Image (cartoon, rainbow, N blue to C red):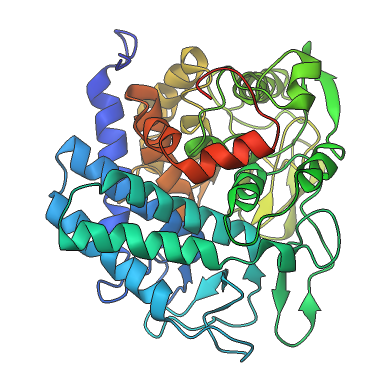
Length: 431
């Protein structure tokens, strides 16, 4: 069932928001290989996570009448053929290794960009996008059969056991010169989708004990009256939910706490709003309809005078509430992406951002972040000059999940996702 926004907001405004964000994935892309730019800055590399978001974005475009099925098929095949055939090995400029891909790739050659890592979690988002396409393109013709075949084979190549590097949890990644990164996916983070994919793998699955080991590192907190699995940046409570409908399904941890992960994200969204209302650092703008602290671009690593004190400002970093870091920079997209969890507070916030701060409207929907407090002068507002694929993809997809549940419905029919959830111990609900 489609949701309608409150009468003072309007369904057409959500539609416009989605459509403007959708345009990024039409234009910031190499049409020859399907790679999507990390951001709109000229010369930027491709982000494999942006590519992962692009594939269900194209599906949304077909369903909304913004592009033809034939165009979406062509774009999807370009992506799948590239990742199926790209160089994979231990050379420093290969595109991937062991079924995983480097976080950033050169937009033209598709080879590793700079010193980026072979990223397990970003590969997870990429594979999730491919599996969405495999479910959606279900017709019996040559192109759609190829989509299903390539997506399945690429997913099966990911060696999740190797990525654990002898430990229980999955490592962040690997580099050809230095080996595995020292960090692992531990503590509640954006890796829940990745763990489900790793558990559901028919070729190199991790054991259920790996998921239990991850859950054992959670932190349960009570903040502003809300008890929830804690993570500071808002995107952590959103990214995996783009693909997995966590409503009414529970693993052992959430059963014990009497919630599900969807409710957990709802509470995290309210904590963000409550923090902005309290506004302990007295930043400009913060309030009931002005919030959204997450990993985002910022005004730069510097210190300025603000409200009679020395205030540190940051560049790209994982901002969060209520424990920071916080320098007055908000990311409107982060509020929008919580739409399915708490529309009653998200819709007025979108309206406030769009109506009161028209200067943050950019070529694609809204700019990624802005800061009213950077200079301390009312007429000098810092606004991120760029748009990011990993911000705009979630806008399109979570707006669609709110309106029709499209991506959630598709992934309920993905057997690998089902298998992963069941092996993680999820029960009840749609399972």
